[in-house]
Structure formats: C-alpha cells, structure tokens
Image (cartoon, rainbow, N blue to C red; front, side, top):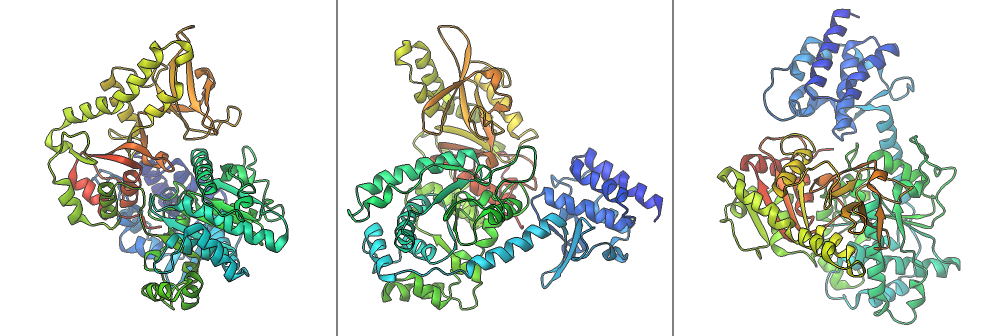
Length: 633
C-alpha cells in the first residue's frame, strides 16, 4: 500500500468533512478499517462512500452508477453549486478505484469484513454489512409470511363486510377489498394518500379479524397498535377511538360485542419492541416475541430498514402483521424505504387472477378489476391494496399534491402562474418571493399567528376559573410553517429566528407565548419526540409553565427547567411534520437546490394541509427542479 495514496484519501476526507459534504462517521470509516487491517486504499475510499450513501438514506452503493456518474450517484456537491473542492470523480481516478483488486476484501461469506459486495441482475452493490443483513433477513421473513395464507369462511366474511361497508356489489370499494385481502394473509399492506380512509378501513378490519379469531380460537384477538413516533401513535389512538365511537351506532347487534375487545391505545414501535436504554437492542426478538396475535403499524413510511428487521424479529411467526401508510410520503431519515419498496407499482394493481377472485365478491367487481390484473405481477403486490378515493381533502390542495406526486411540471407551471389572491378564503396560494413579495411573507406570518396570539391574550385576561388552555393549544395548531431544510438561510433554525423577529420576540429564550417542540422522547415526563407545547406566564405567580396535551387530550403542565430537549417551533421541518395535519400549512422552499429537495418532500409537506395551503417559493426553478427529482432507494 502506498502511504501517499492513503494520505491523499485522508486529505480528501478531511476536505469534504470541512465543507459538510460527508459526516464525521463517513470520514472515520477510513481510519477504522485501516486500524482493523484493511490496506487496500481503493477499498477504504469505497467504504467511506458507502457510509456516505447510508447517511443519505440509501442501503447500498450501486457501483455501476458510481462509475458512470460519481457526482450524481453521490449527490456531491450537496447543494448542486460549484465549489473549489475535489470532486468524487477526481478521487476515484487518482486512486484508480475501478482498476484495482479491492473485491478480494469483501464477500458474502466473510463475517470479518464490515462491507458486503452483492452481485445480482441489478448489478453490483456494496453494502455496510448490517444493512445487507437487514435486507436479506427482511426479504426471507416477508416471503415466509406471504406464504402463510389464512383459512376464512368466505360467506361469513362477506356478510360481515356487507354490515361494515354496505352493499358495494356493483362498484369497487377499495376499503372493503383491503379488509378482504388482509383477512386472508399473515402479512398485508394498506396504502393511500391523505383522506383516503386508512383509519376508517383499519377499524373495520379489526372487527373482521376479531370475529374470525374468536370463532377459530375461542378467545379474543390480542391486538397491538403502534407507530414510529409518539406523536403518530397518539394520533392513531385518537383516530381509532373516534372511528370506533362512530361505528358503534352503525353496527348490527350481533357485531356490537366485538368493539369492546378492540384495543385503542397505540404505542411507539420502540416501546412495542421494548427498547433497552443506551443500546441498539430490544427485549422482544425471535426468542422472546411480542405477545400479540395482530400487530398494526401506522405511518409505516417512516420505518427504516433496521427498524423493520427488529419488528419482524419480534412479531410471532403465526401473528398477522398489517402496515398502514402513504407510499408516496418521505421515507425514514435513516437508511431504507420499506413501505415505498413494498408498494412499488401498486397504482397499477399487478394482481394475479387468484388475488382478484379473493378481493372481489361479485362478478361485476371482478370484471372491473381486470384492468389491474397482471399474472406476472410480483408476489408482494398480492398483499398490497391501494386506497384510491379521496374522501376528506380539499380538491385544490389535492390538485397540487397530485401534480407534484406525478411530477407534472406543466400543471405546476399553470397553478403557480395564477395571480396571488388577497382573499383569505383562497384554499391554495402561491407566494413567489422572486417577485419581491417579502412584505407579503411578513404579512402572512403575522396573519397566520394572529389567531393564536389573540387566544393567548384572552387566556391571560380571563379569570383563573375561565382560562381555556386547550383553546390556546388548539389555536396554535391551526397554522404551521414547514421547510425542507434544517440548516442554512432557509432552514428551520434560521426561519424560526426570522419569524420571531417579525413577531417581535427572541427565538431561543423562554418567554410567554414561545411554542416548543420536544426533540427526544422523555418517558419520565411522558412526552414524545414531536409533541408541541406552548409557554404561559401564570398571572398569579409570574412564573412560566409549558402546557402540552397528554395522550388522552388533557392539558398537562411542565416547568421549562425540566424540558432538556426542546426547540422553538414556529417553523418545523417537513420530516418532523410527518404524522401531523394543520388547518393552514405554509411550505417554504429555498433559493438554492439541495439533495433533500425532492418530489416526496414537497408532496409530504403539501399533504399536511387540511383546509388551506400556502406555497412560499423563493426561486421557481429550484421548486420545479425538486418536483422533477425523486428519492431512489
């Protein structure tokens, strides 16, 4: 090994880290492997690049893409702008990476190497070993679960579905078909955009599965509900509870007793698995699985590949596993896009004729489903049902969301070219900052938070017994600014300071009215990552307290001194907003391109809006470029 070549690699790693092209972890990979005995400099360089890809959410480094276009493959430079920094193509050429014999350092059978070279019809891919293991394990485990077909009484199943969904014999009801599909399989996926009724569907699925299980086993079905974040879990519990209450008035008497046996308390996936503090291990695994007959995971788009592995290991082999989520939303920040990969091609169906026969209950439905038939469709799609009818989503917002999701640049051009409306009742507004509408942005901020600030003032002036703290928290939740970036002039940190300046307060100190978001689970305070609270000054004492909603929708108070992991949240990242909805959502996009700006990020941000959407576009070309990009995991 040439020490000059190693010194060169280390110098480039330092240079890239200094310019925030790579993480400290990626740079450290070089020295870690060198100290472990790896002397092939080309291998050390590829290890650093594979680690970099993992930091971008990719489970592997595709060598064919790296060789053809290094900068595009690695998304370097990260902002898309030119820098006086050594480019990846020069690094690869200087080290003659594709001319060496580095392949001898990695193999599928050598547990000593932290990297794995996998060769398939898709080409050669280099993995960090733990991601290769997860991908391999997940594939085998899901294959086993997909082969586990459950026996059902078709006549009784259809009678129960008729009672739950009404007579749908002459039309396609994808919600009903999702239940029919999940009732027959140990593994199933229900995907759909906002307002397509995923919760509505899963509540009825719980009734169906509870009835089947009780008749087959003579005891109630043990149900576990979970979501990747505490906020999403709390929202799932609330939605399930509301749907059960509504269903109670509609079910026939014969099915009423089933409702009492359905659990409505959801937890985080970490809590479900029994996370062990300060470790990557869980109490529940293959030798000590979760005690459940059915596990339902909501917001499954946020599951990363390692979390999916842990979930599969902890799910009993005979239990049913159901994933819910929007396949088009942002994937997890960590490596892997589990839901997106499982649902790829779901919009076309890809169903075998045998699957269509199990989904449809009438000849008319079978005839309509023929358009979704494909005998060459992959096995995984036989376990996926995509809900397609939007039932509670403003049409104007849906038009923007669909155009972004379909990467329809022409429609985006048409919609964004419409003159900016001063009418507050407009459902979708485009604020193009290139046209010098900075004053309009400031006015939007003041107007958006005015309802919250008025509610806070009314609380302050009301007698103690008439102070409605919940109303203030609800008022804050009606308006939310989102950004795709965390750092930089258009990131959440900078925009929070900007909003604070517009409102005349200091962003990062404690004061009355400061909204904060919890950034780390605090089991002692029973606060979850993503929970939002508002700071109040108690009139009687002059001291500050922070109010949050607990898991039951009741207000609880916390001293600011006990909140060690919070940040001001006038603005939050799109990633943090997943699992939430806001009456009026404002999505702010930056002036410069970034690898994280993709159609998935824009789609996720837009679909947080329930009633009103404002798109603040700093530079139109950057926005359109983001629409044209998609995450490829």
